[in-house]
Image 1: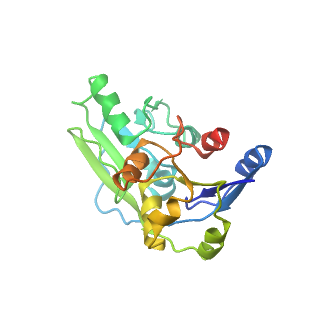
Image 2: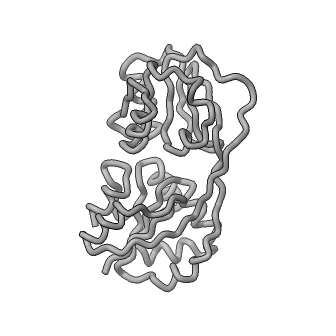
Image 3: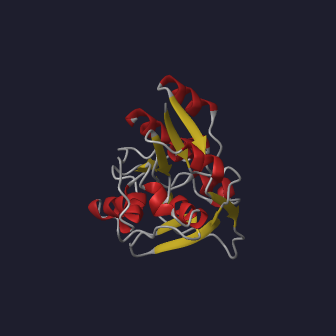
Length: 224
């Protein structure tokens, strides 16, 4: 039976368990990161034209949602973040075809928006978006987590083990947890959630099994 190792912080929800069960895939939760909110000092700018939010965690930790203009367009990545923005009643949500920080930059330049003002709410250490007139406000910090089930994970490794790195931070967390991380990953089929994470893995010459077209665990399960 195939095993897919999930490295994100959030627990595996019932919907994912159901999808995996239908595909006869076992899900193993190995949370390699944890997030903590940051104190935001100063006023939130109000003169921006576009808001950029690429993670549900940003919305979870940002305590000043009421200070954002929900009628201004929001550029985001991922259906789940977009759906959460809809729940919060943001009216104009844009998802670039390339769902990454680089994809957002491409969208801005392709649509001649580079002279607009952008407000980017994100993690303390995150992928930058190289456009002029952008204000970056860190909302939370991502730290390495050291899970109690590391030894259990090592015992589960076989030819049918897959590991999904859901961000560059989860890969860093793997390296922090396992000194012999390259040797371990040679025994596992490695899947990055998207191109940004893929590039981080390739820097270390980690062999990539596949990358989903859409950055979601559901899409990864479909590929197995």
